[in-house]
Image (tube, one colour):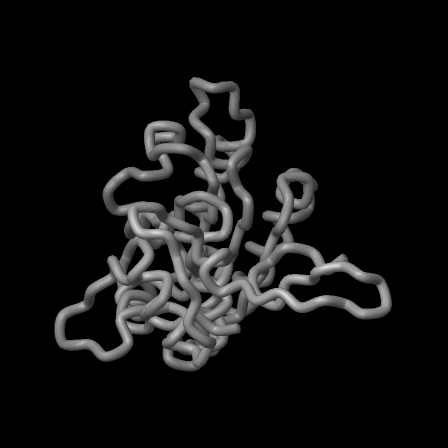
Length: 219
């Protein structure tokens, strides 16, 4: 399921009918190397990343766990692959993303005991020599204050994009945008994007309810 602008009503790019693509193109063209997506689980961070990759034909290396990132060869292999493409003209090199999902332990402030940040700051500086390479971090940390300040340094970080819960009207608009039937959402309460889009159906064989949207594992 690709992201629809209605999933992120707080994102406004004046003059653009597709604010998601416009935003991502600005990131690709910028000199900054890092984009941080922060927000509660289920608010559409992974969906946006998938859409960025699919719509913009970028090469992506994705790490889903801190254990993957901590492997000694992970960053070295990624940087080596980018160095191997240095012989290509800039116009011939497709954008490349290093994506870290659920990166709480990776980008948490060193004041809170993070031992991985120094390695990633070195990687970010190493990536600086490759204008086509960007790093995207997705995190469920509570606030920006929990993120190591060095990662958000101006010139290094393009943006800290906050993902929000949807109110009843926004949740209904998100469903309508992709052709789902209307549902009643309680006024005055907010829901995650995953909850807003989730349709359940009964599995007759096992007698369980399985999600059709979002990233909850199927039973």
